[in-house]
Amino acid sequence: DNSGLGIEVGMSMKEAEKRFIFKTLHETNGNRTHAAKTLGISIRTLRNKLNEYREEVDELDLEVED
Image (cartoon, rainbow, N blue to C red; front, side, top):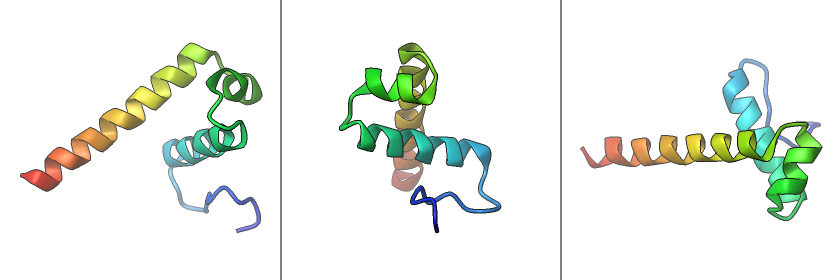
């Protein structure tokens, strides 16, 4: 993978976006304000995306426990 993002052909746009956001957060040392500016989105949008990802993880945990 040349991009270093882990983005591959056939991957959903949602998953690609998620990896892009996390990679950007990593590059900005977790600075959400800077990451949002770099991505060209509002801090609110970034916060909403991160909450969405957190909820997905919580749902996966619940499925494993069932």
